[in-house]
Image (cartoon, rainbow, N blue to C red; front, side):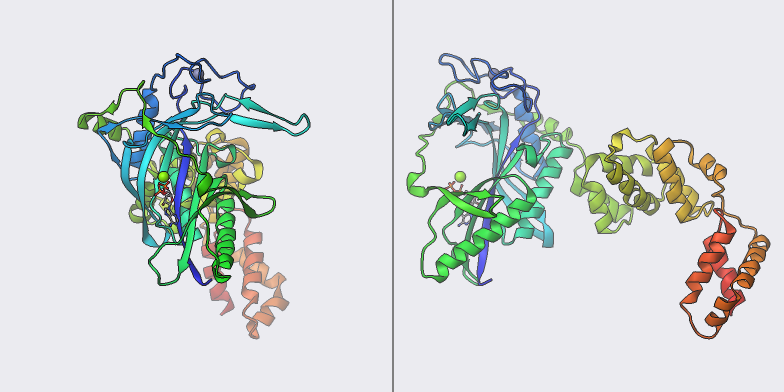
Length: 472
Ligand code: ADP
Ligand code: ZN
Ligand code: MG
């Protein structure tokens, strides 16, 4: 790659309010076409918008989740354009005075990505193209759904930084109950602005904007494609034109939608029907006080206080419910690693395999804690602890009773184990012979036979010790 990509993002997130942003229609995904509309959100003349205070609070929380300043004063503006999915022919948004400004998120490699602003706006409806009838139909259910738009500075220099940022935004907004961030359903949509410049240059090139990417994977592919396309233009002595493009997943390419010349003049002006949003410092602090612990904060706690490896902490915090389960488990044990190993190993495996929901399993976080304790105390082996998780998953129960009933309690009777091992060595005399003649790899095989012979309560550490002595 001869060129350095420069990337900035605009991310639209649907807010998790019960009702829409300027009326009382339900804010729910789906529903029959045009069943979730009223005169206000379908743009009837003479209706007045009424600002949803819940949406404002969630926007402020998005600001706290991204280290922004939440402003004491913000206000709404009208952005005028005509399109059939926008019945009012203007969108109410925040232009001059957004609710949040000057935030940041640190991404892979410790790079700080600056956030320019977060503003509140309303979503537009949806056009449904019926190719068979040759018509387009308008569904206004999405009109007036509350959105925030997060705008970053052009600070990204690689696909990895962008993907990490989007993943973190989605996680933080989910933790804070601001947005469910289901990219595939469009509740979090990413526009990627991208330009390239020769390495070493500090003069940004002309950017293209790729609209509405709906997965972290397609964000990566669209950027790769765009770097290639723009590089070829510059290599051929041409100029990149500023335009909006659409990424096509099936073709894995981007196509021009409109160029800068065709860009709208939105004729922004202050929205006369909504008073400015005024917050006292106390009100802002009261919202901040409602913020839950965020995934990056939990990550820090897990790695620094609990000593988990970074990879494990990342996996646990990726999903709030999973992380909540972990926190509930370690509330009753100090076996931080033991619990995380059981959760990331056997438990994740079973959840993935069955598609079960962690909030609906038959056992409690305390059961996992107890299982980890049993293993740590040497009452059961690590292998048996995993089997206990499987049994809990299938039937529930008490870990200690399960251990007893299934013969998982490790035998700490050395003389008994000694006798069993003698039997095993006798039965495998030929293998023992080869081992003694220098085939060191056979130790594993003999060990395996001994564990098998000792049964479920086998104590691997004790067996290994006795076996090592006998084979010397
Ligand atoms: P405009 O006012 O024309 O919409 P902004 O300055 O608001 O432009 O930037 C819009 C988005 O484009 C932001 O995410 C910003 O980071 C990004 N951006 C701006 N300039 C560039 C550039 N030269 N290359 C890549 N992205 C850019
Ligand atoms: Zn409505
Ligand atoms: Mg802009």
